[in-house]
Image (cartoon, rainbow, N blue to C red):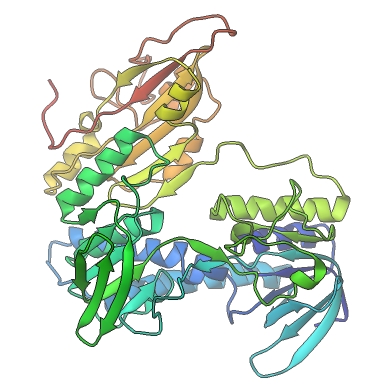
Length: 481
């Protein structure tokens, strides 16, 4: 390491990478310090990439006509190849741009000095004009649960299981819990999904939530709503979760999926007056500045939205502001999200409940996934499930306001949703290849103009109305009437 840098970025996940590349392209001297031996952060090594690679490997195995028996350890080896490909790709970014990358644990010695402690015991201290924290987050661990026991894991350590369990209890039915419920059930493992709330993923529209719950149950996942743990016991025979309702759930493994906490402890932030909340999230302003205006924080360490795509942009925006003192760019109000359950879900914008609360009227239109040739292809391969395709909301003036999607067929959920954001509804229907026309074909593929099925309410702009396009999900694949 050098003695002085214009910018030091702590963390090499999406947020750190976005900040680093923005600063280095501006001609600044930049260093990245990450406690992992390889770049990529939790997103590449313990979160998004390995879990999605595992899910894809399981789907491929399910479609394999040879009927090979699934093996968790073998599937993780497949996922590791994807991880290493990502590491090689991202390492090339830093090497090509001549960024100093240091594998060490970073702490703030004072307002402008960063101390890097390597695993070998070597310590180095360097000065930085600007510091950007992009340390990410880790799974939340309550103190009364023994995570030292090999049968109790979280979303990081579950990737290190050495054998395929026969049963698993997942405590927490958020995004991570639901995704892993789909993954483990795809391996033929008995899954108990314990939800502390009265429904799954309450931030989604009710119809999407009901459809997801239906498909999880159809796959064999046992869902228990409105339950809370009292204590957890583990031994060589298995794990027992004692619930406050006097139920005892026993399984081979317990996966704890009850939120995340920011990686901001033991970094010297308190001495600098940098505030954190109870979950370790660093408090920042609209420019991602902390209480020290030259120290920024981005990505999961600042809390919501906790999305890789958003973290990358946060890193870019923070770097721009750090270098120029201004940044007119900001995250869009509604960020597309993708949830990799089976079927997948993507979402954008307000839910039906929120529009009702805001007293925005809407109308309902329908299109069906089973009108698509893709559905016939899936049915040909024995796939009886036929989940929902897009649901959209549009306000008067035909501007696309909102979309939900629940689909089993592989796709790019966030990209599909974002494609229509802010576009006119008729333009969206002409070019969005996932919406069938009245004859069951693909819109945009021929000369026929595709009209929205719902009647758009034409009203003056002062009387904002909305039309909702949604796709109802058939429980079984049925022929078009």
